[in-house]
Length: 584
Image 1: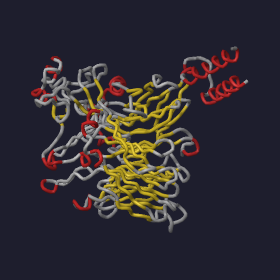
Image 2: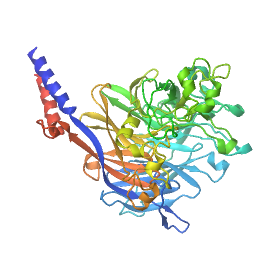
Image 3: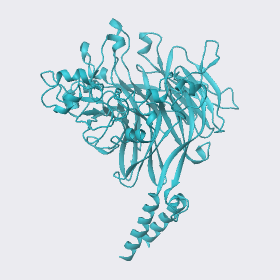
Image 4: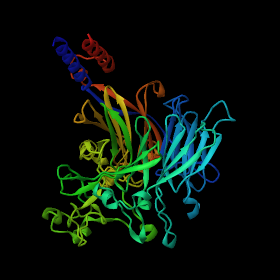
């Protein structure tokens, strides 16, 4: 009994120490990454998309970056003065993702020369960049043909299997319009990366006859016209592995689902619908014409439609964290079809089950009249809306890996609320070059709000830290998870925007702005980091920037005048005492 009491007291002390810390970000440095003209001269400009995705070689302190049609190699060994050491332009392509594994660099390419070329993308494999070995540095090992419009690629830890999310977005126009089959590509290097490889494409045709079951789970089948089938409507985008890499989870953003792939049998075994979020108990700003920030609760729903998804094991639980950006299919430039409609237009086709206050507010552009809703979901047999679905969860969710992927935590409206409170001039901004943040404020409220899209995780100070990249206009929110999922808390939000009354384009020209539309975040710690401490790399797509941000861990107990020293030392000592006390 005595041992139990002592153990309980010590472990309680450990918990109190660990819960007394907060997390934030601060700038170390930013590199502005150019495009190139026909004579290979560097051309700098806002919103060129020169940095979309990044990968990191920790041993050599090299970041590989792709964006638009450019491949960059960046030396980050001096974190205060990053240097571009190599670049290559791949004409008539879009470089969509990049990864580093072992001694090799892998990147995916969408070939957009013509309709035929877009039906077959490419994964390149290069030898890693080597400063003192010109012959081997970036030597091309493979060009592997894969399916239409590859998006994300993901190697396993041994680098011998690489999954490819074959997004297969619709393209072409008029009679040349095509919606190719979405799929998951499996590249294998059975004898090592530089040896012959195999490629297998996994498609979703087996699910074409299971639509009722899928829709009951919240899976969306969006574009059904012209006899389109589900396996063509599905658009794989994001990949994450379970702990032993026997299962891959594939984000199907527009379909509001996550597919499950068994890597042993190489089969797509399930599609998990993510359902919808009710805004009855949360607040959002649904209008860009309401004269500012007005957060309210409404009896409407939104599909989660996550961009990034991350598998993690925390407190003996397998979880998937999702950044619920939202997205809609818009083929207006291809065949004059768009799934979105404004609330004011949806108000003309409502059934009697829609609450009266919602019907009234849908007619008001300062309330729900401007919010974009799905025109293909929520309809009854009479063609009226029984349920109104908008796009995106405007935050993050933590789901348990199991039947139905039940939600363990959802951030509700916290991201918007915190930005509204602490950074009102940047609230839900599109980040348009010719406008100031203040002029652009609230411009995204009618369409997915902050657009939470990028994710990274780390375990720091005894808590699971979640970094969330928000695309509108560009910020990073931090959440932390304790020893229970109910102990998940918002920590802070970082903005790389110094002024609200100067245009985004001018701040770019002045080299003061960064992390606008953060598409990718990579965490590095300890000796892996060029800063020798906790840090993240951030790819800012609109700002065309690569940034290093320091992760700050603040001892709130010491700040409040209470006893306390460095967290890691204290928690480590208490942890050891806790274990010894229990054993003896």
